[in-house]
Image (tube, one colour):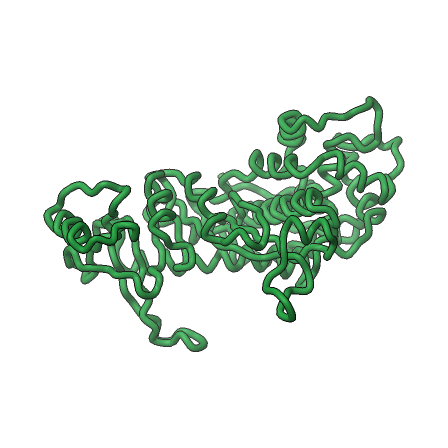
Length: 410
């Protein structure tokens, strides 16, 4: 039976629907940030929902957000109507008491699978399509943030603000962020991705651009049993092991630390003979090559070379592999939803201290997840592709409804 979006799921209710009080309380307990005194009007669970509200209403100051959020939290049993909305200083102090870890723990507890078996664009032969990608975020230019996150470039070409780097896994069909790693600018995307690759499941297919390829990353991801569809970096040697019936071919990916020509030749010979390869030394992969004649921009006719762990054409045709890789671009949509529509283009985070900046970043990821879950539910109820439900329009509806002026959709 298709899910139905109810009025309570719109406005700030979208946060409580996606981020249950139980999940919040469990995260608070795990991180050891329980309420210090009984009866305080900003206990940890309220501070968490207020921090999420700051991301839902980035144009408003702390006091205005508090009015909007606490008014909605009352009917969900997360706020005492006898309390007055907290001040900006009170919210800041409550956020400091939360620290940097609790919001990441909340995200871990709520960011489950959003796609259902009927979600369009979410599956490849019954396996969930995921994408990994990264983006950068400007944080306030304070000495503390500069020391923690660093700047892009140096000298006259140094960035105006310190930059946080985020690498995330997203569902291709729903754009929902499912896992993330947050670090400073010096932490490369390829390095941060390793914390995500080990978390894949056997019934998933991970798509990735060539910037994420390394033998180590491929090995980590393949060891989980998930299938991979990754673009090959330029210049990667791909010797032919076997040409398959559909014109694709098998190759062997050899650990670059093996430099001796004789050993590399032996590994290629072993692959051609069908011998089992030591995963510390080499992996068998399938190569799918194609071009896009009508591609917009300067990439028309460019040869796209994709590597996959799906070795048998019977398990996925060449065109399915190519289409699966193309779904990777849905991660760009997820990034755009957070950076352009939700946060606003060029906007700097609010937080002037590193622990609060990290906390705020996880809050942004949670709010994006909550909104995409809302969209996916509405799309399923209407038998639509989630891509047909506009993120920007949904966000406007949620924001307007907080002031009592929005119409609730069917």
